[in-house]
Every structure is written in structure tokens, then in C-alpha cells.
Length: 176
Image 1 (cartoon, rainbow, N blue to C red):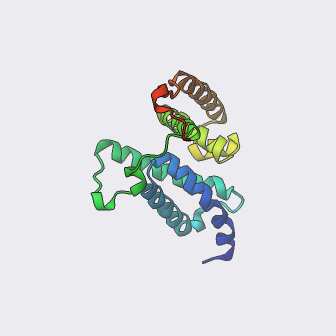
Image 2: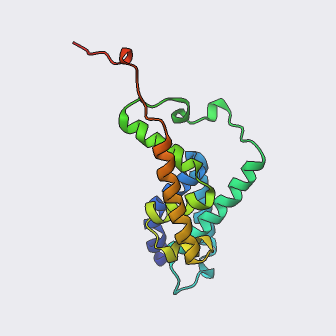
Image 3: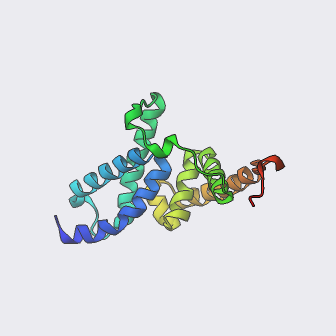
């Protein structure tokens, strides 16, 4: 494997995994997506533009693979054998306030339309510029800006509309 390729790709793997996890919402599917993305990037390394942005090119590959998979799974349900199920998906996290806020944010993020969620994740989480996000999504930069604006507004409305977790006093006991 080309040392230049490894030098450019390896630092991107954590960001690719984060983005894939946010898109696929399931660790194993996200890991498979990143693996396929890396295989495709390595196999087509000779096709990338030498003067192009490697990060945007690889995120484009990941995004396109994810959209294909999401469209495919939307048509048919996913069956997972109980033995293959991730234990984290079968358990319930504690009810700490931070955990509740995190779940509230993830739930609100999941309610965003795909085009708004993807641009929000690329720009805010993965810190791509508007121009890089436009290249990844293959849309004009103005579209990225308007989708991002609408995503932020809708996310703020969804979070403020979510009922705050409150526990009746009977659930709050002091321990002596």
C-alpha cells in the first residue's frame, strides 16, 4: 500500500466512523460502511484528483454508500438474530440528566430530514467547510447554507418542544 495513501487516509478514520454511526444509527452497520468506504477509496485511489481534497473525496464515497444502503433498508426490514444483537442496544442507559439531554438531542436529530441531518453533521460535527460539504453532497454551496440554516432552526424547535424529563417526588428519595 502506498505510504502517501496511508498518511492521507488513516487520520480520517475516526471522523468517518462518527459520520457513519450518525447516519446508520447502528455500530455494526456503521463499521461495515466505513470498511466498504475504505476498500473503495483504496481500490480507486488512482481515480482521485491529485490536486483534490482527499477528505471531501472520501466523505463523498461514504455518503453515497450510506444513502444507497439507507434507501435499500427503507424498502425492507432488517432482521437481527438475538445472538447477533449488540448488547448496548438491548440495555437501557441510566436516567442521569446528561444522558437524557443526549438522547433528546439524538431523537431530535433523527427527526430531521436526511438532507438537513447530513449537512448538519458534516459541517458541525465533522467540521467540513461549506464548500467541502457541497462537494460531498454534490449540491451548490447555497443549498448547503440553506439546509444548514433550516436544520439548525428545526433542531432548536424540536429540542425546545420536547417535554423535559421530570420525575414525581416519590421517585426522588434521600439516602441516609
